Length: 330
Image (cartoon, rainbow, N blue to C red):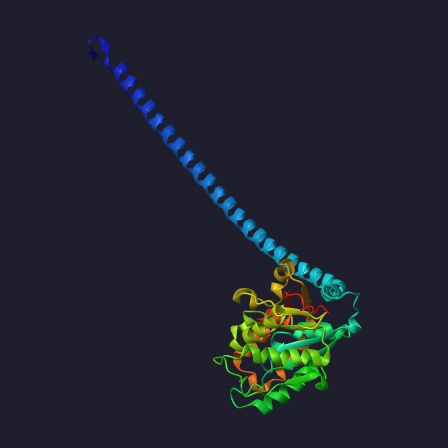
């Protein structure tokens, strides 16, 4: 048989060859596609593995970085504390020599802490009292009330004596004022002239040359604390304070700084102040023991205060400016 003069067998063979080549091309294309797909999946899985490894590495490095920052901060605090131990005596002498005409030794310093209530001495001034006592400074306390707001005056008076003994202040150096016009009351407005009179008489009677008290914010914002600052500022501005007597006010810090415990130390250290008093773990335990003497005041939030307050570790003071004394010309 022929088709257009050509043998039919030749055409059949030719068509079979074309069909075979076409099928072979399809298989090659399919095999290439499968290989490409597998390669892409392999690369994708490898990329996912590398990404996971990278993220794990980042997390580990972040943890190490955080630990490094924390340890560095703690080392910084330790260095500041050690530097303070060496420099505190010099800072105190500088404060005393600002108004004094001669060099003053620690044994010649007679310090008065003026507070409003029993427990103020350990809640706010413990680091200062501890450091001054360590330097053999004569430390006295003037508390302007018995703390009789809840009719516990007698009990709180005894607690104050125990607390001061724990801090190193003998009972003979403690004066507690019981005046009906100076009640323990956050809503009461104390007479500034009266408070000034009580304080200046005590200063002159004992010849104190260093007075430490609250600043204008009173640390806790208590009206009685602020009244003491107003009274001392009044004495300073009117020139009633004896010569060579330095007046210092305890700096009030913000709420966040107040409750980050010893972590606040570098902040206060860096900010300008005329005197900085810092205690370590032993001083903190001493301040805590003094606070625990005030059994009548140990409500749940007082334990939080003992644990987190920076005032258990550090006090910073600013100088209260004084006007020149009135000069008499004969």
